[in-house]
Length: 103
Image (cartoon, rainbow, N blue to C red; front, side, top):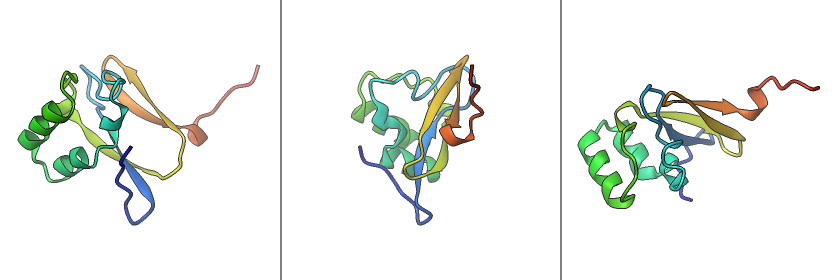
């Protein structure tokens, strides 16, 4: 899976924090969508029409409902994380930042 790594050693992760529909969680058959360098580029340059056209060509059949609320979170390379979704709103949870309970 191709990823963008910045000079700080962080990986760009695309997710949809807005309510209504998720990006990764509603397209789990295409996990590379959350790392795709072209998607990251179009978001950073605010080229939303090109973004939508690109996604439709590259990932036919992907659900695009969350495309209007996409954001990029930079996470240190190698960090374990997961994307949680509630009512379409996604959030990124970093494994080392979670407070786990022991029974």
